[in-house]
Length: 182
Image (cartoon, rainbow, N blue to C red; front, side, top):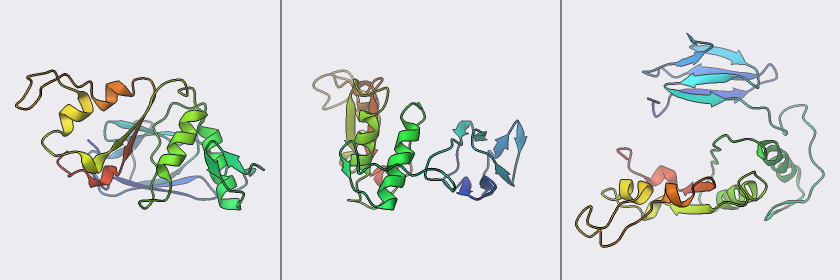
């Protein structure tokens, strides 16, 4: 129910600017469809049938920057890295899905692993799925599992990546490489 290019969000001094991009199922706030507006951190937007929580993070304008030079397996003391540590620290107690964007090789998996290690899920599995290895015909059975004999070539049960990461973290690496039909 979420369009490929559904809504655009960007931080401003006043809050988070929201711009619906002409989506089919709309963007709503407090039950009212919005085309454009500014919302505050702590707001919940409905994007199609999905809820999107706008949570405050350190590193935002006016937020205090941590003095740390490392976070989990991440190491660096530059202002950009310390801001990242602050953002990750703000997410530690949260149970929201996190989208990490960046070019291949920029350390998204390291960031995800560090966040997992500091989260309430730290004692649970951290499972990495490289989406470039999935074939379009088997995406569903790889993600959700199958039993032996479910289809030609299914010689044994496969629990699926979602079950393997149950109550932990599933890191979907190179998600953009999945065909749009998946």
